[in-house]
Image 1: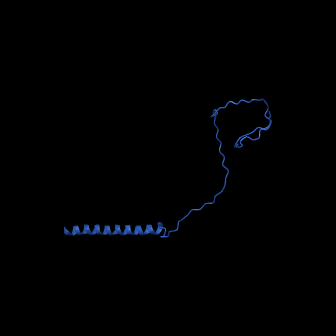
Image 2: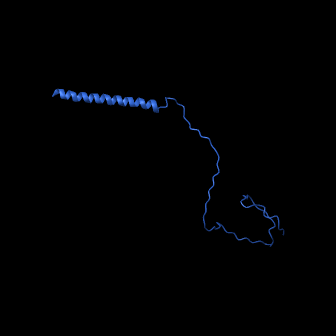
Image 3: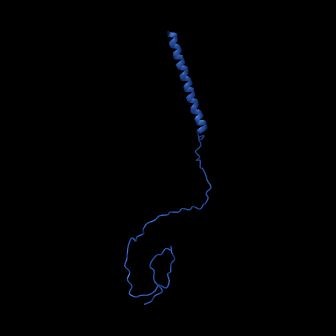
Length: 102
């Protein structure tokens, strides 16, 4: 009976040694293939930047309302002889009419 117990112990010991060797070998294999070799240099991926034309169209329907309404009243009647801006121009400051005079 004592012999059977020794065989089981020796099999477990051999299995434990084989597993430990596999774990240690796996650790060193991992360090070899996946390690950065101990260098402190950072790795960068570089890409060439190009320009392209992108177009996007949005179609919707609805109703536009003014956020603020103002009642305009003029003391004199006349015609607008010119408009000094184009559609889409940004206007800063005060606009002064140059066509109609009092």
